[in-house]
Image 1: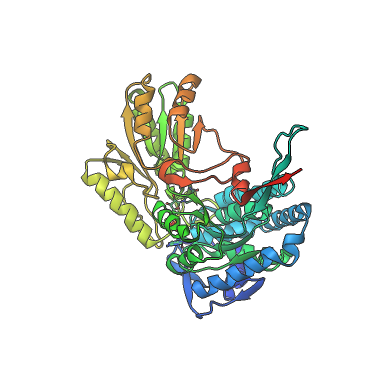
Image 2: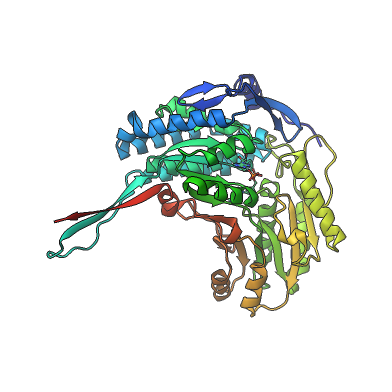
Length: 499
Ligand code: NAD
């Protein structure tokens, strides 16, 4: 396979944004880490350095939290009308849209996801999120209780911004995850310190430049790049942070929950998943197979809601497995920045080792490798699209989140035993999403009620902006998106006046 396809956009990124030192954005200024430390940012398609970013730690986080606190209480932000705040967010959405091609390319270079996806999914959804949440600036309200003429008090509730928010994001959709936290926080009137993932921090820093360009008041959004154990932990431990909004692994999510207890920070956690795909014999098998292939290889399987456990009815199992394997073999694997790439690299060597060790464990426990199963020998971190069949529910490949391009399949026999099927689907600690394929809508609704997951799609339905997203069980706490998502950045205060 060939090397990175250089495009004019890529050349100007290297000569422009990536050629300058990448610093922290604190109180409206670009600063080096106080320690002077930096870390290398790699292109996962080649394994080579593309930039040096500032390695922020507790000292920088403290400066950023102070800037966010100041901006929360003084200056233009708290005195701005809701409508003005909304206008600023719309201006930001327009700026992101103007730079969408460049942001998508940067995102693909840094995270390895195919540029056609970063452009039309990640960046497009981020623009939608900014516009959607801009609308909430003028619509968030408290309430008053029903009162009778005899009532001796007047009682109402006030909805207030929660305060300074620490936003901690992962590497698999860095731009979208950052915007999905910053946009509802701004709509609610909060200020933010963002700690992007150390494996893909670039698009967040470019976003910082756009915040500056549109005139967001200094300190309203601060960006501290650095490692989880230093910068991330410092944000969780900081006594003046009111809320942590985290997207990442369940392991780190649990440690954040414990750390947040010290000053009872509000916490929203969007964590891992091991989502089932259930295909009944009456389904549109072509559509089901195509969609299942697409979702598992979307972001090279590094996607929290990926359908990674396939349950296909025994009557259609062979057809689904063959259809899936044929599609997987034809996938164009390559660097994220190449226009024709359908599946990019894994994010790092460490993650490749993890994926390969799961494939090895599945093989040694008796799973059959229908297609893939090996590392692709070339520069960068590539693993073949892989399908494991004859998998049992007790195998680690069927229980753990692998976060790679690996689908595990098993068949089922009964179609009328919804409780038994739901029990199979629910047999994991996760509960993020589930995908059902059938023409029998009673079956679909029956199963949707029984499956413990935050998002259930039937016949390829997709979640839309106003709907909340989040996990049951160990897939998370709270919801992002919709009314629930923006209200999660507020506190409610009840006021009662004696008359
Ligand atoms: P991760 O948990 O390793 O890291 C996520 C972020 O947390 C990074 O910014 C990291 O630096 C930071 N971090 C690490 N240790 C920390 C600590 N002790 N204190 C504070 N911050 C710390 O996750 P990842 O590997 O970057 O991302 C992959 C995971 O994210 C997967 O499990 C995936 O399912 C999950 N994810 C979930 C969703 C969702 O919406 N539910 C979306 C995307 C990704």
